[in-house]
Length: 224
Image (tube, rainbow, N blue to C red; front, side, top):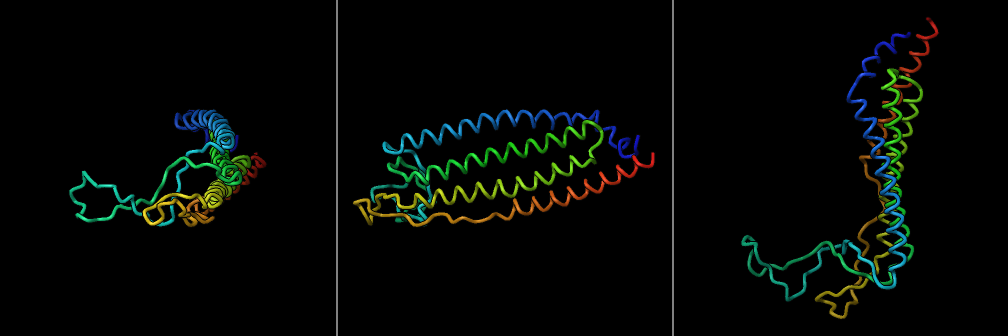
């Protein structure tokens, strides 16, 4: 048996590895439930489009509260201050179909991203439980994990932003426009978060380490 296998032997008895293994399986079951729920929510929103669906959105800039609103319970607020809100929740009719579908796809991609991460971690836990973590399957799992983190998280973020922008012409009432003909500006723009990129680069570097370990293991086996 190779030196690498001997070094990995304690992992076969590790409770932490078993915990990761079963946690990954449990998350896969949860992800399956969440996936069904996301599809049902998408279908329900499409069916309730004409009667109205509950939406939460950012008006784009602080909008004043209705003039009859009175602040209370906050003695530190100076008298005569104007209250503003930066987030709105309401029942909206005739939301564009494209907005509902794209936002729903963003939810589905988020769930699939989590499921993909669980699969990759499950593969890594399997190899560690077998006492041979430095194999090519582990390196491939880490590369797949990097791709899922990058494309999954960034893709879901872009889809949610695009879906929000497609519903930007929702009309609401405000003190300046009591007839309700005030249209909030674009609240979000498709963009990238740096954290998934940084995590993906780190996972690719870790995959290179595992790939080198797998090559060393193959060389050691060839000498036996």
